[in-house]
Image (cartoon, rainbow, N blue to C red; front, side):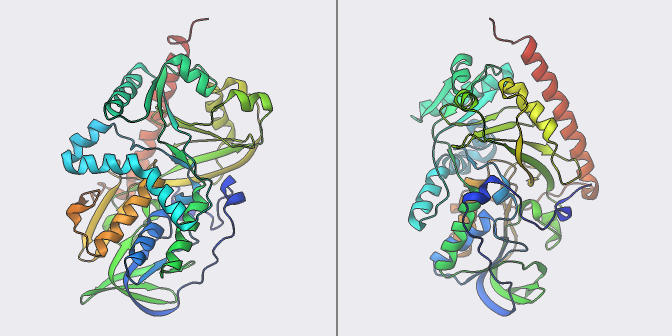
Length: 442
């Protein structure tokens, strides 16, 4: 089974590299250090935790096995939805009125939280709020989206239910049955953003070390000892922010997730006619399939699309298969040329959602990002920092929990692969039905 450890150590060749500025080129950690908070993982959640903890006066060290933002933080699509993958009422029913409302508020205000950080720290990351479209591929998912629109409209939010005709105008395709436009949703260059968070954290006093893999973690008296190849860190708190790249440093945490790949592509710049016909108002789009399609058009006419989850081995995503899926939605696209292709990893858990864990006294973790992660990683990283600097767990966005291990974890990837295959079969059947029974009338 292909896993994150099989990935090349080279950074992903994404469109975000062009405008993310210079890499940080930070030194590996050497020698012995004593701090208040040690953070494992230099992605968005880890860098957000470092920034917020340092701003609260804590002495902070971050260790990153590769480079800042190397994982999903730079490999995602850069979508910033003002929502989770669950419907609002589902969150309230699952987490209760207190934490459910907090999660709703955090997801809704996530793009605004990012906007404030970006402005305060002068992060150049192409942040914008054009709105995000969710497109329904079945009558059942359309009904859910319409319920979502009503929920937010009753709260006075700019969320609009889209008829099939209106969605066709905004997308450039009439294949979907309708959808929702959430004007609170945004877009970002995620690599530039995470590098900006890291620079802001360093400016606030945090130390960040790249090329530094944690090799052991042990409790020594009232503190933690975090070992690396070139030295060690002793800390009052250790924050694990490694998501799909979580390894055996704390075994029960690794056993609580299944890493699943996603793939992303960009085309070469499209013709003027295609640029005008696809997402003409430049919103971003995500459909409601179990293995969804995401779409984003760049100012220079390149189309960015992605999909997942995938469990297939190998380093090179399948361009022909993915282009075929996109052509189902945008037949006018035809045989366009590929510019970039890359893959990343999501972390599925038994909650199918972000979780914040108190693993032991002074040992905290947040993981479970499997889509919609940039804003929530920012917020949950901040919350880890708040808790490690004195804020009670009862005041955080997510409730603290213990990891739920997958039974027979070494074989769970094979089970996940079968589930993904079944999802794809169901999606394909529903898309065939959409193209036949629900085809728009001439």
